[in-house]
Amino acid sequence: MSPRRFIKRCALPALLFALWWLGSARQWWSPYVLPSPAQVWRAFWSMTCSGALLGDLWASVRRVAVGFSVSFALAFALGLASVWTRRTEYYGHLVEFLRHVPPLSLIPLLILWFGIGEKSKIVLIVLATFFPIYMSIRKGFVTANRKLLEVGRTMGFSRWRLFSRIMFPCAVPDILVGVRIGIGYSWRAIISAEMIAAASGLGYMILDAQQMSRSDKVVAGVFVIGLVGYLTDSALAALIARAAPGAGDGDVG
Amino acid sequence: MAKYEIVGLRKSFALGGEKLPVLRGLDLTLEDGDFVVVAGRSGCGKTTLLRVLAGLESYEGEVRASERARVGMVFQEPRLMPWLSVYDNVAFGVEKPEKARIMELIRAVRLDGFEDVRPAQLSGGMQHRAALARALALDPGVLLMDEPFAALDYFTRMTMQELLVELHRRTGITVVFVTHSIDEALLLGRRVVILDRGVIEARYDLGSMPYPRDLSLPGAGRLRREILARIMNQNLNAESQQSESQQSDS
Image (cartoon, rainbow over the protein chains, first blue to last red):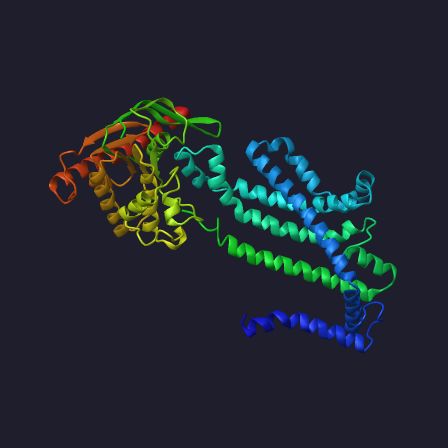
């Protein structure tokens, strides 16, 4: 990265940090409302040293990983089935309805149905991530280039061969976008999931700090969540750029 | 190579609840080693004829092939798989591709040295040559070409036409070639058929004109004028018929 670009990227965060630091030092606001950078750093450091932070991070990452995997498998299977059967008139409206129900509103029912253990947390993550992944995968299959599919048909390809040789490669970029969006959504859903009587995880850590009136811990937790989310997303974006450079884009002529 | 007999070929498309007939009982025989150019104004059914032969459209009537053979289709656009290299694109329809044979085809369309390149990095003419090699790799009973050079610039088109004629003469492959360019028809075809509203209106045998053709010869000029007059006339007839039917409607 060129120094110019580095400066451009860091300018705004640095400015905000300076304001935060200055405001805390001059006591423009009470430290309870927003603790100083030093206080947040101390909270972060003590949690890191005690191992509590790592434990919570691991608990959350595990839930995200399981929830996302289940969600992706479901979305892939159902997305494929919906394209294969071409019977959207039967369930299209149901999907649209469910898509607009906020998963948070289902928490009372989820607790009734799945208890307060891991299961209900995973289900909540699945609910929060299924639809964006499903829509993206479906779009990939539906918009698979018809002209390219015709090439396969003139070659007498079977349905399976049409799928594996043309339709699936055409859909790969959209599937990868679905993966990226899905991981982002599951990470964002972790707080709501861990609002259900959790005893570990970053969401639990933040709620616990709230009850203990430890704003410094809350801010530290927010930073960790944001940072991990940002890093995973950047890594995925880089991976996608390498795995499918421009596949499916532009005109295939 | 196979011989094809097309008898009473009919095809209609549904257009806003109405049936729009495109082919109305077309008869055509393709001999082994034939080079038939199908010409006509747009909407006459020439592309539909090709798509029926390629197995992309349902139809009424009969299409008889003397043996079970695959068809090699070359579309107006190259339609290469953008995620595959030239080599993999040429080998795309082949069950168990042999490296030597695929490379031979790549050489035949003069793309050697580009086998590992993705289509996006090729020029338009090179992409069309790769598409031609892909169709030939199927070892087709007939090569179907739907205005394959229409989008190319003048010089590239000329090179492609020469390449195709050379290939046809060398291998004796049967070709059905759709075009709306009369010059292209006269340059390529052993036979030229003129389509009008879904039937063959005229057939010309160009067997007496040897390849490579010189269109500046008087015979070619006469033929060109005759075909042009026929198609232009057809145009007028179609328009006057349309206005007549509109009048009778009102």
